[in-house]
Length: 384
Ligand SMILES: Nc1ncnc2c1ncn2[C@@H]1O[C@H](COP(=O)(O)OP(=O)(O)O)[C@@H](O)[C@H]1O
Ligand SMILES: [Mg+2]
Image (cartoon, rainbow, N blue to C red; front, side, top):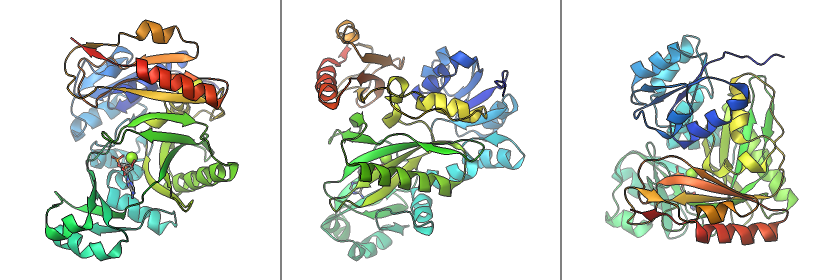
């Protein structure tokens, strides 16, 4: 099969995920056009061109589509009705607009899992405060998780609250929400799943996440996860089952919870490359970004195996950090073998803003953990 040279790919969103997606296409010279509201966005340096416009603007999305052979997106908060209309008119959109419609709304997403027999935390959909109060007796324990159905990301729009606060009216939901059983002491994992245009599906090794308890951002992650082969297999099977049910080609990140009772639950799916898969750039034979390029171009899937155990440390703005910034330890970090620094070219730092990440490779888990902790201690931004 020849490389489909000349295929123009449109990507809705020009953040770091778009940037890394385009970087992975460089060996194949695929031109990318990015839709973003900022001409200086992280992807702007590597895109063939940037179309200036809002990701919610249906006309702009149609304008992008007219210039591209295939469309994808690097963020869920976009105009999916416009994508649906384009899909109906025959435009190739990967993952499908239909898949995005389900994923955009946490309520539809949870109902989808229930309908397809995919294990997920028990939930109730609530349209208002009254329904929210009435749902409390459906859940065990003292606390529940309340998720806004649309618009949330990186833990924003997710609240862990006491039932008492809901019943007394101290907690008010700003809109329609999903109420979920709260699980204490869950271990959080992700499985990246790749589905090509010809029905082939592959999963990557299990990724174990460590979240910062304050910001709820992934602080670092490891792969392969330190777990039993049986659990690894279960997780990868459930992730593949969930993506197969969605029935669209694409690169998906399936977030999983493993409970204290070793139950595996699907939390949510991201229909795009994911923060938890960044270590695949150096750690895997085929990165999540190369894999999505292959899928978009109709090429065969690449090997999802790992070159070495890998860890990924997120570089995020600390509390009180605003404006211009530098990473003083860059030279020291780059002098460490198996350490790869990625900076997203964001103009200004902000608390919790993802500014970059560092991948760490090591021949075994002990060395990996030691190096990752050292990297984490060094990787501190200074503001000017
Ligand atoms: N049912 C639950 N029980 C315990 N913790 C949860 C539950 N649901 C979510 N969380 C915690 O909140 C985080 C964010 O929730 P998630 O649904 O993934 O929203 P987001 O879209 O912001 O990533 C999860 O990664 C997990 O740490
Ligand atoms: Mg999540």
